[in-house]
Amino acid sequence: MSTPKRVLVIRAGQLGDTVFASSIIEPLRRMYGEDVVIHWVAKAGMHTLFDADPRVQRVFALKSRRAPLLLSPPKLAVVRESWRAPYDLVVNLELGPIFNAVVRLVRARTKIGMPYRHFAEPAETHAVENLRLIYKSFMDDQALRLTNPSLIGTDPGAIRERFGLEGDYVVLVPSNSHFNKSTGRNYRAWPIEHWRALLAGLADRSLHVVLVGGAAEAEYFEQLAPLPSNAISLVGRTGLADLTGLIAGARAVVATDTGPSHIAAAVGTPVYAIIGPTNYKRTGPYATADNDVHILSAGLPCSPCYHTPRFDACPKNQCMYDVTPERVLSELGL
Image 1 (cartoon, one colour):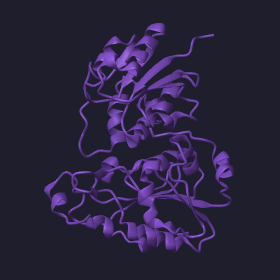
Image 2: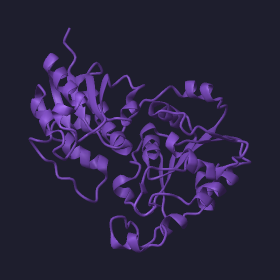
Image 3: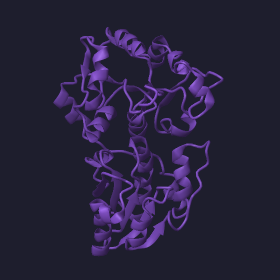
Image 4: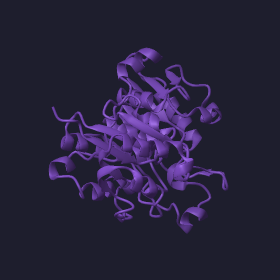
């Protein structure tokens, strides 16, 4: 009986980055068999995305991506693990030099990516397609056909039972983490009054409306009170594995350009992503033949504008205001 292959994946970004990088999991299982041992280097907080995923056996969680190797216990643990049992493959999906020292010291038969080869990232293609530029350097065509984001979370049935969700439900994600402290703007936010109107429009439907967000965002969600009788707030009550299971069991998800929208796309739940200043063709939920992604954009000629003078000159995110609650309700078709 052969020993299972061991693979180390390095991608320690935010939630969306981690979801996009999950596109490597099924190809690795195609290349090396379902018993392949996959270890992952992730950013602390994002590492819980794999808590219920049996395909990823170990995650090294980094409190600081930039901490020098000798001052980073998780990075040292990666190196020690490779000396205990060398990896067959290390894939560094980070394009910068942060993990160069780790990759150099890790014992592995094959090493892909930095510091040995830099893969230039085209500016106008989706992040998942850019990852395929790395995958193509070591995957065959059969494996490449499987390179779509893929997640396994907590069992949706267990989530339903835990939170008393009977029948159909939709998930709303009003908040996101892209608040600019210097300007006070959240450039990916949909206006709070639009969220209130959407909640009111869903109030008389024969389904639950579930609100999700981080515990630190509780004050933001107070602006939506009082909630309709069919709405339930799970703000601060779901880790990422639970959130994945919750989304997997939902009838639909409404969000902005934020992590849960990418989770929805990865588990195949219809997602309605309201996107304005950012370039959804590059960072939006990744559409495939097996999922159901709807980009709700105002289509203004000045969009996308983030990181341009047009964005700074806009008194409010007009492209987000112009996507109306009535349009979202119509698109949902509930």
